[in-house]
Each structure stands twice: as structure tokens, then as C-alpha cells.
Image (tube, rainbow, N blue to C red; front, side, top):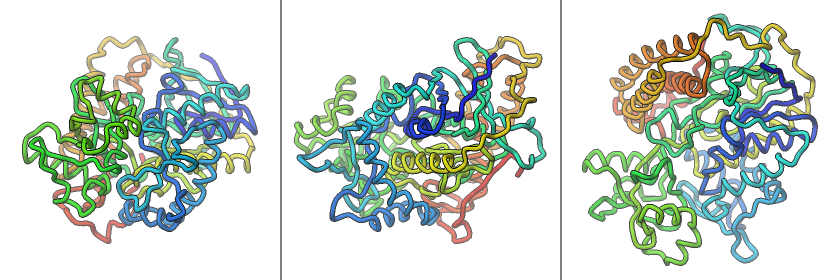
Amino acid sequence: MSIYTSDFLVIGSGLSGLFTAHKLASIGTVNIVTKRDIGSSNTELAQGGIASVIDPSDSFENHIEDTINTGSGLSDPDIVRITVQEGHERIKELIELGVNFTRNGNSFDLGLEGGHSKRRIMHAGDFTGREIESALIKACGSNPKIKIFERHIAVDLICGFHPSQTRPENNACSGCYVLDEKTGEIHSFMAGKTVLASGGAGKVYLYTSNPDTATGDGMAMAYRAGLRLVNMEFVQFHPTCLYHHKAKSFLISEALRGEGAVLRLADGTPFMRKYSVEKELAPRDIVARAIDFELKKTGDECVYLDITRLNPGFIRKRFPNIHQKCSSMGIDITIDPIPVVPAAHFFCGGVEADEWSRTAMNGLYAVGEAAHTGLHGANRLASNSLLECCVFSHRAYLAIKQDTSAIKEHKKTEIWNTGNAKSGDEAVIISHNWDEIRALMWNYVGIVRSDKRLERAERRMKIISEEILKYYWDFYLTRDILELRNIACLAEQIIKSAQSRKESRALHFNINYPDSSPEYAKNTVVDRYS
């Protein structure tokens, strides 16, 4: 077991983590820990793009209005304005780092997605995230002040107290315990400031567009450390994930609908006009629920996204990644409709953070999907997530730069204590609980909820969590048990948050309360003391 020290510790290697690390390296040393290789993240899979006011016919006010409307009354107007107005400068920085956004002549080729009143989606073909990730990996990898630890998995924050039912006072974070997957050892990563950039938690659900890494580690660690999680019931289900037995978590970008793709039933009937005057360009919650309703009504396994009316050359040029992926599975999207289903995609909730990405714990910051800034409210406007990553990574850097004082290290909690743990001999318990949680969350806490479904989910999760907790303390830690522990923690908080919201609002739809209520036009907050 080793102790690694640096001025700053960044947990996660998506856009928010790498952008923050790149900036922090200008004022100190940075350790980045990432649970797989450096390029494995939700950012790498992002197809659509990043929203920004570029076109002369567009305006900040238009983008602000679209964001607030999509957020269904829960977006923080001040945070929305900060994000929209500061985003353009951050995109300039990405371009300076080598990100090549697609151009149309001398201008950027701007896409249109659901909920946007103007074309404002900057993209790099349909692999925008990969392009951004590549540029940031190059920048961070070549910086001598940044050290990257791959296949290192965060276990718990080092915060100077043993988890108990008593809320600690004057608490501070001085780093994180981290599992080296190769050796099985738990190392202590000590730092003056720690940044949670660990991404979302799509793997809580059976069907997701997220990679295997998205198990909500940062959110769960923050919860265990006593911090508040906000609006965890608002899980965005992307309407269109590729439905194919060989496909795994492959997203069909909303940009296809922005270019005119039509959703159809198996018999070819278009159906979105029944649910919204905006049809395929309605916000994601409306489109996902429409698909869910139609599938339950017809008994079909999927619906179809049809873009075949567009010129084949345009389709191949605009969506090369999607075209190639579908072609590899025998689907030519220039002549064949694409089979699609909804899947868990993005968490609008997360660790409570202020406008400078500061959490309530001294020395701890949260950025990206792991954080709740107030931007998304009850539903995220398409392509605002990468924008949020850029803006609040920069703001975290500015806040840290203003306060570079080191946090006093807590000597008593630096070294991980394995206690009486031994080698695990019942791996089947982990796989069984993993599958049960994800199926339970999909069936009972998914796109459409009810009081009865939530109660069933709550009862079952209590039993599962007790089993996981016992296994956690009895055996040496592995990536599997850590991820299982985290998805169980977050599943319980999603259920608890959903039960407390006695209404339907945007991404949270409960058939017992089908309408929204002014009484619940507020954030939902959970912590381990409530």
C-alpha cells in the first residue's frame, strides 16, 4: 500500500476531469485516477455535440429560454445564464487545444436537436466526444505536472472521520482511497484539493447508453461522506438506443431527428404527432414516454427511426459513425429504418455544488454529470451537458486558484485498514445482485413509475443492500464489489427521491400523480442523515 501526494487529485477522465486537470496543472501537480483506460468515459461516446450560440440569428436569451423551458421550472436561472454566456469562451479553448469541429465552408456546421429553437449544436461529425477526448488526452498526457493512474478505482473519500450516524462538523476532504485493480492494493491519494469528475450512473439501469464505467462512484462516495444529493429522481432516458442483439449501449444521436428522421411503428406508421406538436423534436422525456407507451400498447420490442428520405451521400457524411456501426450489423441506414428503444442516459441530479463547483465539504469540488449545479432542472436540454462540463471545470479551477491553501492531512485515516477481510468465494452473489438491481430499477423506477412500484423497489433494495454491505466488509475489495456497492447506494437514493415527489414533472412521471404541482416546484434533497 502506498501514499501518493499531489497538489490536486482529479477522479475521472471524461471532459470535466481532463479539462479541470489541464487547467490545474498551470498552478500545481495533478494526479488523475481513472477506473479503466484514460479514454473510457461517457464523453468518448458523445455523438451529438455541444450547444453554443454561434449563429447571428441566435442569442443568449434564446438558449437560456430553451434551457429553462426544458428544465420544467427547476433550472436555476442564474446558473443557466452563467453556462450559456461563458460557454463560448470555453469552446474557443477546446479549439485552441486542437478540437476540430465540423465546418461548412468558413462557418461551423450547426446541428439542431430537440428542445432547441435554433441550430446551435457544434459537432465533429457524429463522434464529437471522441474528438474532444482525444485532444484533452494529448494535452494532459504531455504535461509533466500531470500523472495518470489507469485502472485505479476510487473507494471512498478521505475525510477525517469514520462513517457513522453523526454528522461531522468542520469536515474536510484530503484525498481518496483508491484500489489498484492490477495489484488489489488500496492506496491513499492525498491532495490539497480533490475534484469529483466521475460521471453518471447509467449502469444502475438494465438498459443504458452509458459505458460500463458509469456506476455513479463519485455520487455514492459523496453520499457516504455525508454530502447531499439533489434531484436524483430525474434520470433522462434517451429515446433512441440501437436495438440489436449484437449492439451494446450504442446511441443513435438525437441529431438524426434534428435532420428530419421520423419515428415509426413496425408497420411504418409515424406516431409522434399524437404526443407533441414538435413531433420528433420534442424534449427527450416526451419522446421517450411516447415510445414506451407505444411499445406497451403494441407489444413490439422496438420502434424504428427512419432517415431514408434524405440523400444517402449526406447521411454517410453527416453520420459516419452511426452509418458504420449499423452497417456492421446489417442495417444500411440510407435505405433501412433503424430499430431503437429508450435507454437510461443522463442524470440531471448529483452532488450538490455551487456556482464555483464547490461542495459543502472543504477541499472537495464536483464537476460534470457527477455534480448538481442547477443547470438541467427536471430535464436536460440536448447537448448542454458538454457545455456544463467546460464551464464548471473552468470555474472549479478559478475557485481553487483563489484558495490554494492545502487541507491538513488526517494522519489517522491515511492508511487503508483491511481488518479481517479475506478472499471472496461467492462471486455469484455479486453478479446476481448486480442483475437484480438493474432489472428492478428498469421495471419499477424507470420511464413510468407508480407508488406501488416504488414501494416494491424500496423493500427489495433494503434486503439487497444488507447483503452487499456484509459482503463488502467480509472480503477483499474488487472492482465488481465496489461498483455493486455504488449502484445499490444510488438505486436507494433514486427511489427515495422519487417517492418524495408526489407529482409528475418532466423526467419523473408517476401514474398516481399525472400532473405537476406548484407545491413540488423545488429540488429534492437526500443525504445519509435524513
